[in-house]
Length: 279
Image (cartoon, helix red, strand yellow):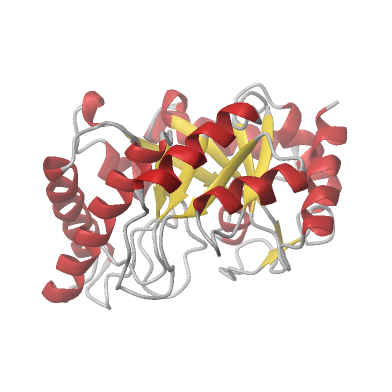
């Protein structure tokens, strides 16, 4: 189990590694560009080289890139889907240049046209993106909290999408603890956690589970509320994370924190808490 957090890239990629080291990260996640805008500036080759070198020196691995907030691969809006595919391809190219293991993405909203239609559009978008950019990095679909018209709030939905691709396509899963709980998966008890991971295995395959986003939840079970909380201070609680950090299907995966505030102090506290629970 390697523990890290999402770190800002303000000031350039090398600075992100400095922030990760300050926090005591063993793994990390970043945005490769401004997450709130379509316009992007490609990282400079010298910054990419420095980023890779500093990660190696600090023994920080694996690295993950998260797609921008605006991305919607399931949208009925053709232009929005086109821009989303372009953004996803750009993130995959940046991730490969940085030596990242994977790109984490949400699938977006079906826009009121139904989950089935959204899934079909997401599959088409992902086919276009992976067709233009090979499988140099994993593409990890993140479970959502299931709010509104979001696609991906059930493991079966992620399974339908992933199973539409051949095994060599490089698609996998990011399991967000807050999202899964808010979507209705009871992961606070041994039985509930086993049933959840059993469903993941049946629908997708545990071998495709590549990353855990470790977040407590402000919302209760099935609330569909995507509001992260510090570890042990939300509705999941310390017991759930004690179970999850020790579960054989999860304990050897990288764990990335996306908890609120994201100051160095808070991130260090959350990471040390996860490590202590795992021990």
